[in-house]
Length: 385
Ligand SMILES: *Cc1c(COP(=O)(O)O)cnc(C)c1O
Image (cartoon, rainbow, N blue to C red; front, side, top):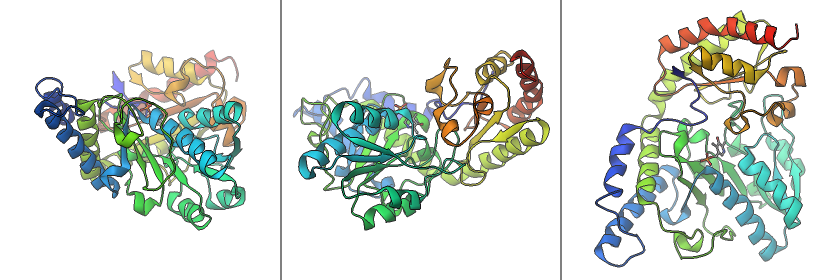
């Protein structure tokens, strides 16, 4: 079996596992306890926070640990929206249909149940939010703009520094979902110019069930979980010490090995894109041809059932996905692909191939040998010529 679905999740790096191990057993204290068991655990949490802050280029007390990327997105949107309304009477949220559901569904809920107004930003044919679109949509009652750093379905990288420049000039807060991007792109929050940034460890060889949110000092934010005073009062709940240690170690390695990982995977990705477009009829690349994360290739095939294709690939020994992992079994075309302007008969035939640390050139060759026949088979079985 060959795994080509690293955008859905990645295996835990054994070096990260080793760093986490002692915190499951020996160093098991509650960081909130005042005795030495607690102090040792607290030291591990604070060291992890400093490591992450070093990579984000921020202060340690601007890093909030959460349970996952989704929670970070929820805390950013809901936490800022509620605080902005309370403190400044602001009620408008700007985001895009291309966002992960952790952002788009949260925005929809804020509109449906909390009286906020959501403005959906225009995207170009590659799924990019351009700074001009943000500029046009900004208004004096905008509470928050949320634009993802890189897209999980089509791999496109958004021009965050240029969007941040527009937001800054107009005095509006900007959140970016960097859950997918952090594996390959720099996450220096000063260079990006963002006020909030979401991370999730399992997308960069860290453990599942842990995330972080960068919150620039002074940003209005209301906590969503009430209880203890953990995380500066912004996220109650006993710290998950081993997972926090794992998040920091995984991010440290991603940062340290960024160039090396990119240099190895980018040519493999470009080889896949070139071969698919050359050898498979009625195939199109989705997302931006250049401004995309280095491990990501995504396509649509006309008149193919994408879920069927993924099942045929699975039977042939290849694990890929059709759009976002969260949409498995859903026969509706992806909202992301529709918002990029793909007609239904194209959008239903989506395939995402994402590479990672375990991918070899032989894996890629085996995949490229199998794919054209399987697309043809899926096309035949889909009953449309
Ligand atoms: C995976 C992902 C999320 C959700 O992160 P979890 O840690 O799985 O909750 C959010 N946004 C993007 C872009 C993602 O790829």
